[in-house]
Amino acid sequence: MATIRPSTSYFTFGGGEPAYTSYAQRGGIPVVEENVAAVLELLPAFSSLRLMRQWAGITDITPDTMPIMGATPLRNLYMSGGWGTGGYKAIPAGGDTMAYTIANDAPHPLIKDFDLDRFERGALIDEGAASGVAH
Amino acid sequence: MLRIACPHCGTRDEVEFRCGGDAHIERPGSEVSDAVWADYLFNHDNPKGVILERWCHVFGCGQWFNVARDTLTHEIHAVYRMGEPAPERYR
Image (cartoon, rainbow over the protein chains, first blue to last red):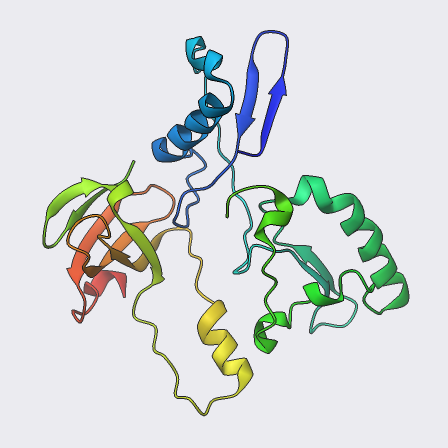
């Protein structure tokens, strides 16, 4: 579960993704069930609430679930992507370090390990716990 | 909820299965460059439409098999056993 966001008359919560690639953008009942189960484990009183609607979008997830940031093989083209599971928490730092990387045409020390070439080097980043969601 | 027809057990819910990614990719030999090896491991097709995948019936017979699945509609067009060629229209 990624978030619970209180509103005046309802709560929004969400997280997770199906275990297969999809462009359907409609989610899946198993993921809905996982999310509801997580909420009820945390807040059993919510069992009296009704599920009003569910939503799903597309997330960009890399093989090691960590973003890819930095230069690309094409000169003057930089990339910042693959934020699918933790972007809205980490992107303030991601934006700062990308700006530094572009301005200096050299990776900021904090993101040098997040480069595209890490897959070729076998230097994947195993830090699933950092984003606070199940991977 | 996907309903997948395991060739050994019959049609079951998706929660009994695990998706194993692209089918019909060939493992390169051990002498290839890092770039070729990384390409084999990490660079896969990501089609919006029919994809050929390996699936395993982990909470059933435990067997692997192939599935032709539409990533947009979730329709499953074909299920065929390991070692069998993909249906011609999806190759």
